[in-house]
Length: 313
Image (tube, rainbow, N blue to C red; front, side):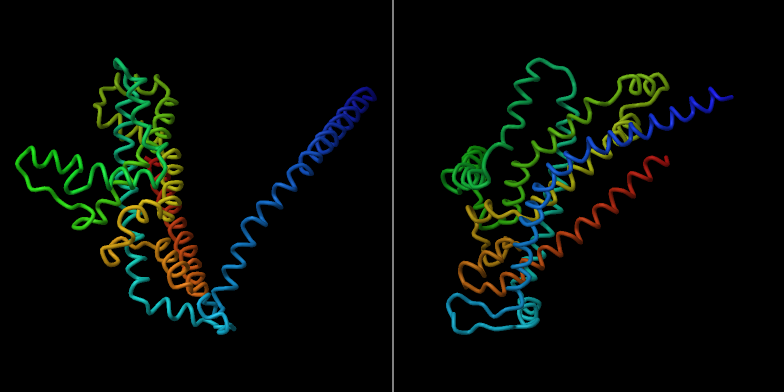
């Protein structure tokens, strides 16, 4: 009995000493992480705080003497500005359309490149190469080499087939921007989804095939549930970047014709660097932050709901 008590006491003391050692081991790690966490907080909070401050100020660089507290005046001007609402609508259209194209096409390409065929490595490299092209270069390539109504490759192909060339950036500006951004970001979705497919256990595929499932049933009940978390990551990351799309618009349409391709980032740019209205552009930036958070919450609930429904089935 005494030995049992002694053993229990020794075990308790050993576990306590082990926990104490682990705490002492984690303490230096926390001290090393603290500067990085503080830096990130300062990096995020200071610009956001300054933007909120200027959004309540009358601050136009062309009229430096007219400074002061504006209250909600900048937000009131923003909500009555038709260009702002056009930019908001264009932003939502751009994000939703690019998400649909990149995720759908990326999934199809991932299924294709997951199969075994001759030259698969070269084909994969060529498929993901557009992702490494800078956004401004992407805009210039499509503007001057593909969409140009006289010298563009698409116009040459249409003339060769007996059709009249189309000035894409003038007559279909939003569609042109969607094509450019989708071309640039589809390789990202392909890369992430292909990685998810390669982690799919072969025994699951073989089991459903032995049960007599066809390709569609295999895709719907095995592949899609397995890629649920991966699709969530792709949608969230791409949404963040699509909400901040700027360079492709700047290099091609400059927000036009009119406001046809003016999204929120370009609207903020116009107010800050053309009208020099820092107060109004800061209010628009806060509006963009609010939109991004609303969009993120909606996507989280939508994707999480689909994942829970899929797991329940």
